[in-house]
Length: 82
Image (cartoon, rainbow, N blue to C red):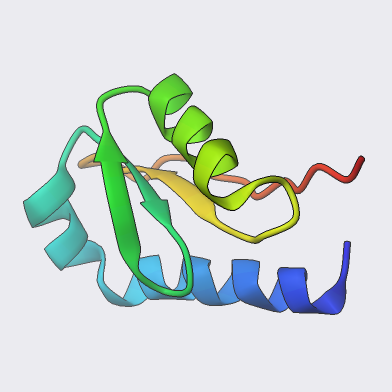
């Protein structure tokens, strides 16, 4: 995984942390896709969010899928390298 992708992943996670209250108000119980520190889409299921991410960004661009819940979820970032 390149340093650029790791830095982008970290920035996306930090974006969520800084804007969590606003994100909860707008997207509670949704899965949001964040790319370049911006919420670009929201979905009812992880499957739909994941399919969107791969379709729009492919597998070599960093984006975050975040489950918006009242209680903090355990999130992780993974990058596939083929």
